[in-house]
Length: 274
Image 1 (cartoon, rainbow, N blue to C red):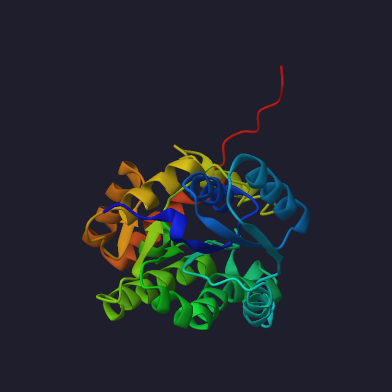
Image 2 (image 1 turned 90 degrees about the vertical axis):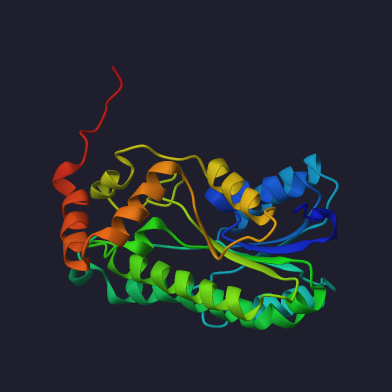
């Protein structure tokens, strides 16, 4: 069903790069006004300047570290201070680690929960009155194919994304008939800087076929424009096949399978210019 993007003001987290930046560009060209949230103020300013040059839309930026418990309240206040009425929300921001859980600094693990779980829940709650009041917007939550599998070395991240799937499915059920469309998009390996800083072992995460951030956004927007979007859309045929496998094999077998898939010994050799 056609979406009137020009009537939308979309709050988008993780907007400074990767899938978030791709969402920002795609929505701006369709005429949506945007409130962009990200931790890196310089990159956020850069994408905002780009969009102001290329699209006739209103762009607001709120540089915020979503690992801070105060971040959702600060975002809500910043939006109110600027007289902005948010009609749609995209919970895109996420962080992860690639290491055995015992080797990850506990503060990093709790930060993952804060960014990947607590912030989306708090932002959804904070803006729910505006979202339901508008009655023609959407909530898109970024999940992951890893939500369907126990994922050794990404223990907290995969658990957080499994939470996002369940959270979204419940919201989808509760909000049917309100005019507010809700769903999660579950990408697999995507060509972004998500693994930057995870160390060389994380190269195994993108050792196979990698989707572009723009592909993920195109999948999400096509789903949004369907007549009756379901609560989850998986990006990419290979990823959809993986999800099907996850529903067939036992959880024990799935965990052991993923341990092999993400074994750092499978890391491809580094390439040097020559």
